[in-house]
Length: 361
Image 1 (cartoon, rainbow, N blue to C red):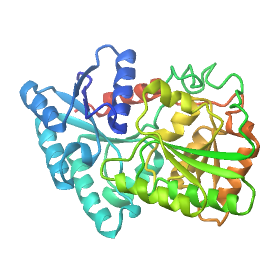
Image 2: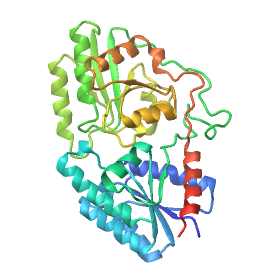
Image 3: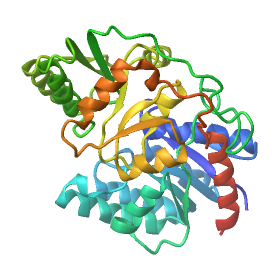
Image 4: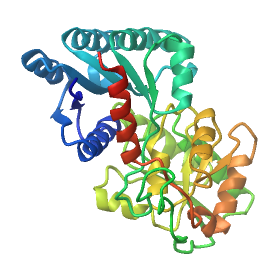
């Protein structure tokens, strides 16, 4: 059977779309027989499949890219699966943090999508657990393919897992921070649950206790669609505790990468990831982020030992202590020499190609 046609759906700025594009590019590099098509919307993807009838198709799916509602997204995936042998990478899996009503509704939609597909890919063992706990614990063809680092990134692995040259060759400390000013950066979109509020509260505690003369929490990005008012609320909360809150807005690729090398404390404070490129964004630029300890981040810490610094988000004062320690020792926020960032996207591509051969209809 031929390899699937990889259809990349959505605007390039969307995280799922960007990762689907990265994976497709690595697949083509590994096997030039792989084909890809990029479309702006899921409706166009459905039209493409209906018109061309490829034998096999692979899609990266999150509900908001595939329909105006959860039910619309599920129906579209079911229609696509009726037209071709469809495999999907599911993103943003349902979990309890969605809320009691939403988690059941999201689970029902994802169950329909997963059962319609010939096979399902997830990006972590944590996501496989979410799949079993909330979607379907008896899906027959599931691949776990961890998010891969970009081989071309400055500090990413140049080889595949276990190969020579698969780690950071030398430690590169960020510029020394102004000891009087604590700057904490959270990369990506602003939306509830991302941890900006936790960072503001922790920085406020440090300022109040005199352990930081001043503090700024920086959102490296802009608000997610529909969450513009959350920025106003966060700014007000910051002002109330004597902390500045800055939002950069969307940055170009070069400016975004440059911001990772500034004298700041990198923070990933989301407690409810199903998978996260933010961890890799920091690591690919040679930075060791302060990261909330969750089932997913513990898995990533084991996968790439030494690449993140975990703190307990349920322990009072733990985040403030972690931020202060990183601020006082900037070298602790640099990846240690020899840190492996494997698996890379090359490994991800190899895993997909092998799996597609196994599950070919």
